[in-house]
Length: 433
Ligand SMILES: C[S@@+](CC[C@H](N)C(=O)[O-])C[C@H]1O[C@@H](n2cnc3c(N)ncnc32)[C@H](O)[C@@H]1O
Image 1 (cartoon, protein in one colour):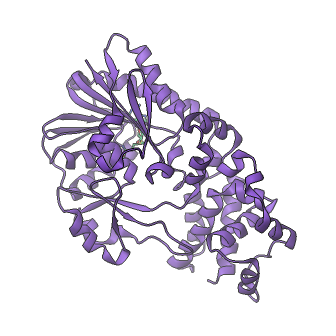
Image 2 (cartoon, protein in one colour):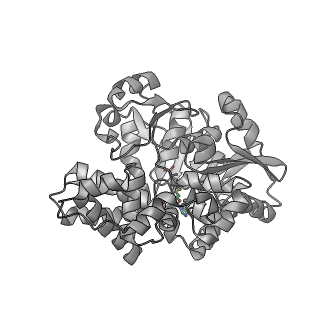
Image 3 (spheres, rainbow, N blue to C red):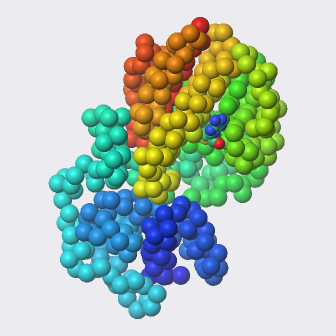
């Protein structure tokens, strides 16, 4: 396919996402199934245009003076491929599949739009109701912070120290120009894609099949590290999902002690079995949601709540979620977070730790949930630990990068694409007396 056909396909997918308010991954998959002639390069190029358009939907709409699918698709090509309108018009000329170029007025406006004059929510590329919340959560430089959630993300990997060392994996992945991560000690980063490129499918690499590394955002790796899971400990990963953090903690614990991995959703938990086997994790026991776990009450040195959340910190990877999110959905997540925190508290042993993690940047899902938990748990004796000091001790070269906020006598941490170059993550640690 030439650029014209790819752009037309991207516009079709964008219309589908908008009309049916459906996840972009589903719309792209359906498009691929009904257009089997398209090769993997075509699909990647179409995906790039669609994702770029959704990441910057509001600012592109503002700059074009039109937020329809065609205008957004063209804006994404002009911006993402850094093409001038004349060059784009020349490329599309004679391509019978190419959509019609926007008129001169729109293109002129797109090139000339004075962004400094745009409202904050437009520059931040978020809906108004979210802008108000991010302003509270992220403070003074919130527009810059939010705008960084609209950039293309890198591909992050975590080296599985149960099976390999970082240098060995860096060498095995050399053709993809990997680099040691900035902060995570076992992290590897493949830079964000540029132009029409695409990330390598690292999961077909021999090293992946042998369990040498996992795909995991650097922020998620750091959150696992901050729990301090140590060899010999009894650990409960209460919202284990596909097991990203269980696997990271198993490596930190060098396969000694015990991790109990649980989740309320069997479908989400299902991939963990294959991942554990590939990674050589032998200290993880997976619990079916129907299992009675009361036998573990009061016995865990560490209970991790990697809470269900809006995922607002991951909008670089799931930009459609930013426009679909509703206040009702946020309120529902907050209720779930309260419920899961209360349940988790029962498992912590005297002197044990309760770690709370979200990949959200809303204070409502983060510090506010911890504050509400502490109010409900007055008799349990949980205190907020100094997560900021923990960060400084574990990551001596990462000082000042994350946002450290005071909370109830301790400190909590926020990572953001702007500050730490990771997805957005919140981390709090509660210590039981
Ligand atoms: C952020 S995801 C977990 C990601 C996973 N820990 C990882 O690192 O790959 C949150 C998980 O919480 C689960 N969940 C939601 N409510 C729950 C509850 N009440 N108890 C246990 N798990 C719950 C969801 O099914 C989902 O898998």
